[in-house]
Image (cartoon, rainbow over all chains, first blue to last red; front, side, top):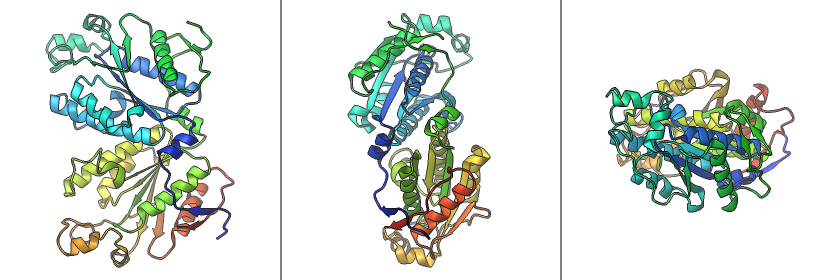
Length: 208
Length: 208
């Protein structure tokens, strides 16, 4: 066995992983009604960040409801456990040094607070993607509101299950009024001002 | 709003994340008895890989048993759910482009197979950390075997809960006989030969 490198035991920790990626780990938590634009805005932000060299991951219903949380339904208790698990995974992703975007309706204040509480204060940003129910209904890209109105989906947030509006989100996006590009720039501006992103970023124009 | 960059919607996927990190995403799954050396070997490998510029994450009992899986005990059913969730998180970590190391006793063949089955074939490597029960007992760094012998811990793998030996692991480490450095070199050699690691890696000498 050759011996080119001498190794001493010092486990790789969040600091080392973040330094390697030259970024500050973070969980950016998007909450809002179905069809408010959470995933679209999160996806657009992720694309911009990745294009600028940041290391990201986007957690949303698509990658957890069929896997990690496939045993869970939409009762209050199951929604709570869903958000708890996603919050724990977001924490692990941030521990891996990543800028982690999580886009979930996450209707209950207590559940969102639990996620905030497991994160270091400077590593959690709550983003309220705020669009009126009427706007979301009008969009209804998956026909879910129509189904809920016909009673084919029960416990649908905004219809027969409550959405508890964030009281002090770090970022409040009026997603019924501003286009995706403006929402992304609002986020980039916040991340820049709060020191998460390095100086010299460029505002972006988006064509969706 | 200025418009320096034009954005078109193409979500960031595993390929883009892996390309950014210049590596092939992978789950390296370490299985073996308590005190067989899984975490030590995985941690040493992680340190070497990170030192060579790879982006990694290490999942083990320390970072999931108090968080994601804190509602689970050690019954067969709970162990199964524990490994299911960890497998799903490992899959997400690999989807994030990371080389993911998972170190869990994972005593049941069926559970390990389920993890293998949710991964693309070329993204899963099973590592059997093989040390005789007598060796593990002799090490017993946390005094767990002693507690199990006194009946203070029930359903302890190797004592009153079975360990099902892997039949075709990609890597078989005789961890009762070889030092950590040799185990790590065996793994580096495998990863190199199978094309996961780029050419030009150096065997290492480890001082633990």
